[in-house]
Length: 321
Image (cartoon, rainbow, N blue to C red):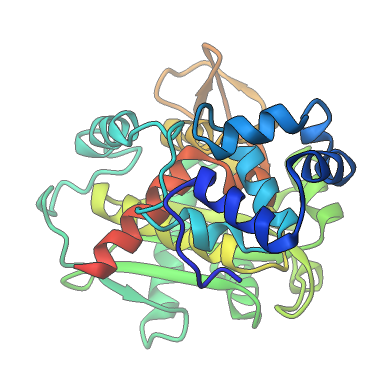
């Protein structure tokens, strides 16, 4: 059903309601039964939405599309579909500029031009993957100031699991960014985010196969510049949304940029690690610094994130050019 094109939620709602053969009152009653998001909806609200007088918030728009059995991310990713409540990307772009321009601890590479966008994306089967895993182990130990010493012997079995997604970013053979995504059960994710299970205690036995519903856990990520950050986020978020077997996203942010990314994605804070005193150490949250701050985002909340919607629409626009 999502092959059709709509100019906005008013056009979409009018057409889908007519196709279903529902009156405005009938649709309001069915929506009330469908989701608590529509508990206070009546025929007058439906009329106003269809006439474009007011527009339901993005979360309600997604629920409307789910009610009509459409894939919301396919509709909302179309830049021609008007989203009146969607904030611009300016605040996010400003944050990336600030975080990835100078502070090497949080993501800048002093040897790579700041405007360099000619990076290579390498997967885990690359010939030099073993070397890159060694670099990641050094990166993580340095990032945490030796609080968490990850050895290649810990990372490699997790990376080699068939369901693990890995991307290495390189410029002229230099590793300037990476991301390691693990598929785990919701129970395992909860143990990790609440601190009951340490990352270094993870084994391949904790991982879930690709053909089973699971949560996605960002084991490790490094964004070596603005263009890397944009590509990484677009790839990450679209892959999560497009996979119906993804239940949630979890992340232990260990740096300021990780905290800011979770804020833009409307992540829910779950727990904090040990308090830290050095102003350049760990992640700053609510005026204090911690060894990590863990976040969780449910799939349906991720889809309604303004940052995700902007990235999806920008990616679709770029494909048209």
